Image (cartoon, rainbow, N blue to C red; front, side):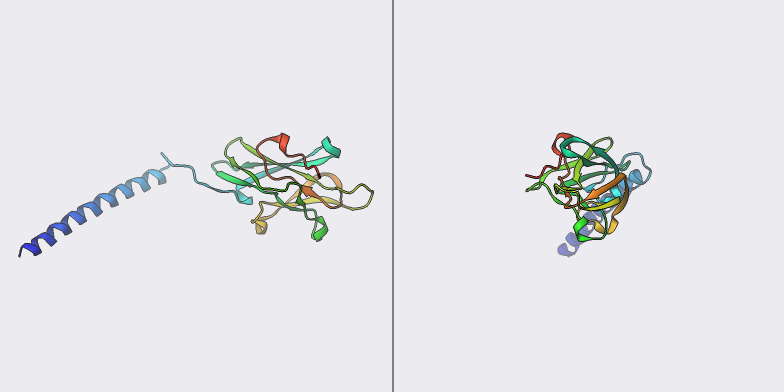
Length: 176
């Protein structure tokens, strides 16, 4: 009889603990659903999490500066690798790394930006193919690639890209 009562008491305690946990979970869910207090979701950046801007720069013989920012309400981490980019469908138009190692991950949120530099022509001649668009995505998210209109028609031959960086001074895509 004693063991039966102990079992019943244990069940009552277990039920009370479960009810308290369920109430706390429901209150937390209601609070988040009501929009009053919600922690930002932090994740690796995907292409659709970002907005991109493309500008021409004249430094180091000229390159394209890609600026990436998180969309409103998103906090994500952009790994310090090159962007997945190409100017067309030919393998010759795909960018290759200008840097030899992965750099620091950039946390994007609000006005914080990440930058990458793309040198469309690393050869020292007049050869290449002219393009008007750049296909861009976060490395590993190529299925979500976007198309950006280049500021002007651009001659492309053996393009290279810097990694994503938080500092503009680090993005000039030198070949060395």
